[in-house]
Image (cartoon, rainbow, N blue to C red; front, side, top):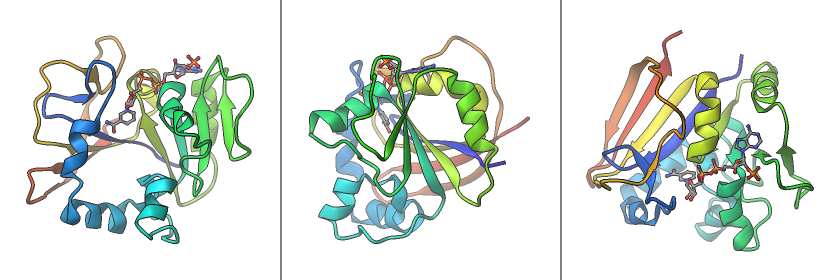
Length: 194
Ligand SMILES: NC(=O)c1ccc[n+]([C@@H]2O[C@H](COP(=O)([O-])OP(=O)(O)OC[C@H]3O[C@@H](n4cnc5c(N)ncnc54)[C@H](OP(=O)(O)O)[C@@H]3O)[C@@H](O)[C@H]2O)c1
């Protein structure tokens, strides 16, 4: 089985963005040390535009070959005129309103989201599936998540967009690793206890 990994940036109090979802307050923490970590360990999570701008477009994928995004998250790229924000991955966008895909590399999942994700997880292959977010999509797919990679930034939001837009339910995860950075960022990896 391929793993579904929710790889997500959040505040210390568990918000992935301000109440409207804007995560730009976290960006200054992507400094030289942290960017070097992302490049070395998770190069495929850096959007295509960012990879081009930093001259790392040719880095091979390390962990994921597929990405799933919610339509609201994908909209951020579309607003910039980018139709394939992760061109180095197979891109899926969950949406019931986007009738046609704006890009040949992007497949829309309109129906049976959980079944489709189960199908992707059941494919052969050494690479996993990157669940990019946002909150609502992660909430819908919570039961399918096998791994969490939580990039915690040293910020408190007080309120904002939660990591999971879902109702109350307890799921248990086991800590696999934790790594700290000079600027206070903490990256924790958890696997689901089944
Ligand atoms: N901090 C981070 O690392 C991070 C990462 C990613 C995103 N974000 C933030 O998250 C925000 C967006 O999150 P969000 O919760 O508002 O939206 P989202 O999860 O990105 O997208 C929600 C949309 O996904 C579609 N969808 C959800 N469940 C579906 C299902 N079962 N079947 C088909 N389509 C489904 C629907 O699209 P339709 O309305 O088209 O039907 C829904 O409106 C952005 O502002 C972004 O900045 C932060």
